[in-house]
Length: 130
Image (cartoon, rainbow, N blue to C red):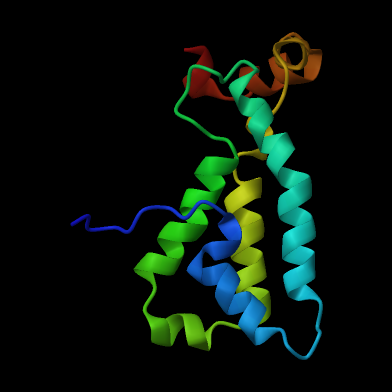
């Protein structure tokens, strides 16, 4: 038996998203915001596998789903119950947004690295230039 249950097929089967849905019967709309955000953010985080970070460990929608799943596993049922809808929504956003900076193309990365502002910034870090 696995210590951590297998990641569900759909992110919407993860404990935190189920909890968010059950906390939202009043119609605050936060569950719907989570659904909309996940559908919008998923293709963007998938770009990490085609850009300059393609040889890194996988940082796509499956990685974000795994983070949401692991949080639901690591937090006790009592802790999840004590979370507000907004607490859960912020965690879901963070699971997707924390790697969003990796979803750029190789051309965009090269443009940033070759820009004067990037060079100036690197020069201002003594530990990097020595």
